[in-house]
Length: 151
Image (cartoon, rainbow, N blue to C red; front, side):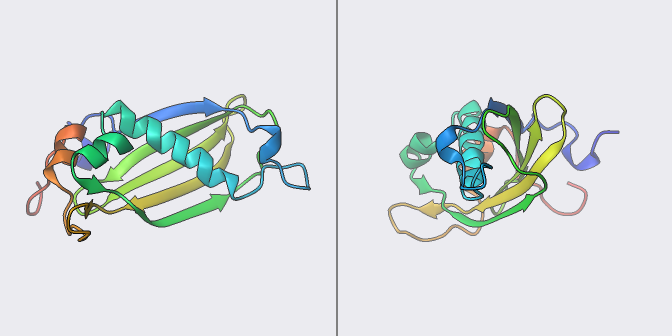
């Protein structure tokens, strides 16, 4: 069943595939926990590039988008050479940019990691945080701000 909140919206997700490299392992021969953030960043960049609003376009539009919160839930360890699929999905875009992530084993589909990141718009010229996302983000995503109840 479709999520009624997202009916009529463009698909705000993107998926990439990668395999952890040897240099990403820790002494226990699994991917070091800090490298998961790098993988999420790769997925987030691919997602935003899909909407022509990756970091160079953000800067050109006059906004920086620092991450102000990131949370990860490690379900299973990633190992060297394991093919994984990382899905990044925009779930909030009005007052902040929130992206949910799911890392799955490409072969079995098993969920290995769940995460989310939150970014806020900062006006580059003034260094002031914006309390609502700038219209350029809404335009790039092909969405509009919801107004009032039921909108």
